[in-house]
Amino acid sequence: MKNIVHCLLLVVFSAIPLFAQQNNSGEVPNPEGRLAWFVYTSMPEGLENPVSVMAGKDISQVLLSRLSPSNPVKVPADGIIRIVRKIENPKDPEKPTYLTLAQATIPETVRAAMVILIPAAENPNGLLFQAKVQDLAAMKGGDTMFLNMTNFKIGIELGKEKFMVIPGQGKIHNPLGTNKSVSLPIRLSYFHPERKEWDMITASTVALYSTRRELCIFNWDSGFQRVDFESITFPMIE
Image (cartoon, rainbow, N blue to C red; front, side):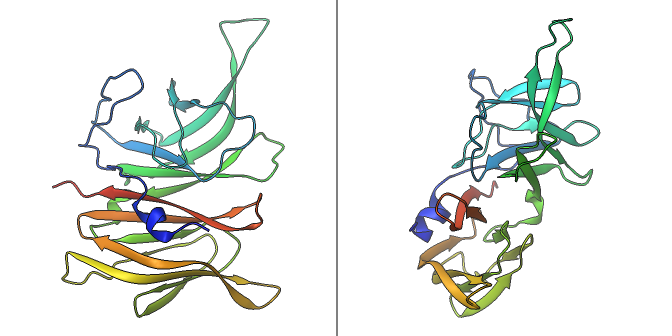
């Protein structure tokens, strides 16, 4: 069973457009305009990685990771970003077609978005992921967002506080108050609908800081038949 400290402290990521990241060629992407980053909870079998990302008419290669966000992709005017697979056209090699594997629409009001990719059930239209868009500007320093991408109720005990996150929803929580940092006991559980009882996912102690934001994503691990979680930690930029 994973330790929640490992979950919440695993990856350092800047989600602010002014914080440039290098791509695989060593070049620093243009930080201007609206940007989106990708992260996935599980990789479907047979999916090539890096993947092809289509934004408008532009197609770029993006390396996906379960433990850290991708390099940023510039959001096109229509806000639609797709992960695609190239299909060769033997009749006209200059005009290949593209199969959409995942699609996310970034609202006009969102300038920095994280696109969370969750494997989809078998889908005749070829989609491999469902996509959840998180507006990074909605989170301030010290915030932890618990995002429930399962079909189970998730129970969270953080310090003396207890709250629940229903399926498909997220909850932002900040227990810092006026403190700049705090260490609190944490317990994560999910409600088993058949046994009508709570099953513990993990319990530990977590350190929270006003200089960073946390995103903890709950998902269903089909291999082990249990609720699992991934987490990203990303700092605030002064």
